[in-house]
Image (cartoon, rainbow, N blue to C red):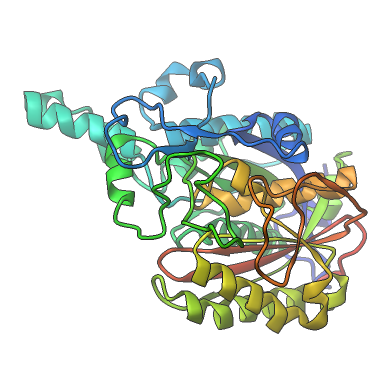
Length: 426
């Protein structure tokens, strides 16, 4: 392709928009965006007992596992041996996103026109544990050379780049669970700055023994043993969150370049903002999250009353849930009582950095299907929110607000708008 928008340089008029053209999902609901959407639209819960090898004796009893995933079906052997499960998810989700966007080698004018940005919170714990056990049990000669990279937070970014020969701006965001939204914002910023295409998202695999033990120190982690009781945000019975594995990868492109190659523009990444309020300081997260929402709306050129649906962070800790409800009231005013709010992650579990990216993918699908998915396991809402529960709600959402907070204190908000509703960058 030719033309000024394929040159890798910023447009002088500042008109470059970052749009979503492909979704790749690996979720406890299933592999692929269609399987994931069916689960969330039906209000299905995929929470269940932790069955991963070596975890039966641990206090964590309920999580969202990705069942039926065979990395060998989508990832070549040479990459399998070098990488952890969280990167297997990322490579698979990337392939699905590229296929969904119909983006192939012929669409890559130069390898430097495609970048990669991912976020990660737990890294490659399963791979790292195995190699450390080899070290302790058999000696240093039995530790594989890939131990030095497979556990690392940046492993997925690197392997996606290497496997696909993408040499544009690459990076990894280590910003707590909210980092998933920050990664999408980095992708949008790269596109506005001159990069044509960015593969971005987050996947996590925190359900290995070593990884679970590390999480047991979080007071916010649910210790409940029943899947229908383990993760119930915004209720009097809230007792923490159930963790999960999986995630999503999005293909983000410059709008004109995407249209030129005949891609379907599914949504626009319109605005983002992030703040920091400190580890587990949930009362203070009210102000931090509200400011993030206000900043994201301002960047998107969006009034509070234009928000059609909120995908809540929904931590499941009473103090944190209350702070989130109040933050929405602070940022959206009277509209906070009217706007539908949903937290489909209560049916999949909270996949750390990948949780808000899955929410963004779900938001895009919700806008396409005209349906707001429900919040599984939640019925007795105790906050002044219009939380969608029970069954999906027919609607025509055009603007979605996605929220994310991290246990270490990061807050983020992202505005995603259906094609044609976002103003061009001035």
